[in-house]
Image (tube, rainbow, N blue to C red; front, side, top):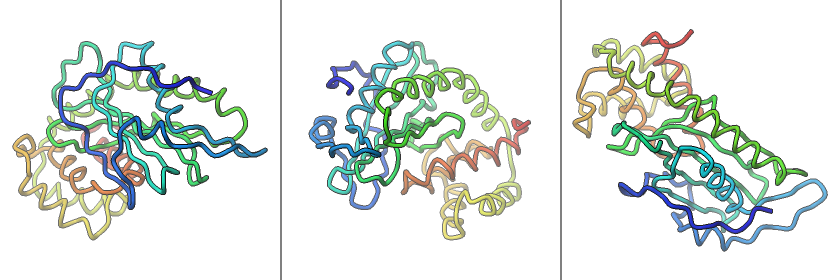
Length: 258
């Protein structure tokens, strides 16, 4: 088992990131996560404490040039399911538009495996998006405690390798100006790809036409991207696959896809 969580220095430069809770979930402190009791293992199922996943991520980050910023944690189903977000910053970060985010999840009721997904949070509005090539999911089977540190280390290694790619992606989104006609066409195509449902079309259009934040008044792909992510707030479990599809659509539009 992973040792108890040690104090970990964080960079707290702004409010807690926006953790969109699931039905019945509650925002909690890390101390509340530690209090959750882990069920006993069986011959085929080996649950791990929620805080073991958090501690493994923290200890791995200590070995890199990355630092944890603000965090958010939630529990649902009487503590059986955990979701969390950690902002990740480079020591010499020079970007004030967005930061990387690690999304963590774990369950004690066999609902889903322990896992991590990486993405970005736009600092002005806490809009979240995720990238599909940095993630892992490990079922609660024998040797999960042995495998967990290696899997977390691999995910964070990929995060380091992809840092520059995300900078390049966002820069390309900002440089690519689009018309209303192009934005409308992309919106229809995004529905076909499962980025959003027909029900969300008016929300995305409203955010595109009248953005809540001055930073997105530019008529470019970056503003359209944030019109989507603002409208997609509401289900952290669905967000990774939706924003991965969104990145695929917009990357192709700005010429980043192979």
